[in-house]
Length: 158
Image (tube, rainbow, N blue to C red):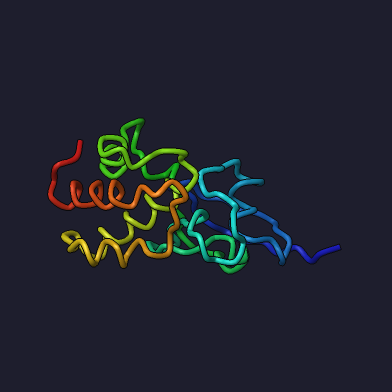
């Protein structure tokens, strides 16, 4: 039996008080306990970025963070980017620019792009590529993803 610890987190603006096993990852907590399945489990070693979420505004691989480490944190998942049924500008740009094919990497790409634009609202192409380097796209949509981020940075998205 694993030790459980009490944590308080805010996810997508909603506060939670949870008892979680000490060994539970943030990814498993989000997907299995809170039914927020946007972040995907893929490599489980922090190499692909499919599980990216924002923790206190910083993009992290949720497969590498224990849920107890998030105690007191503000967490945003891809589900939390939309506001009142309105897509986030990045989400709209991804659709407009064809940056979504299979969709598996899209949540992590959106989270990484959101973090990038929050810290650098007008990145160069090289800065976008560097900012998204930790997120793999198996369909090869890198040009479209970059175009979507450029569109938002230049105010051309919905």
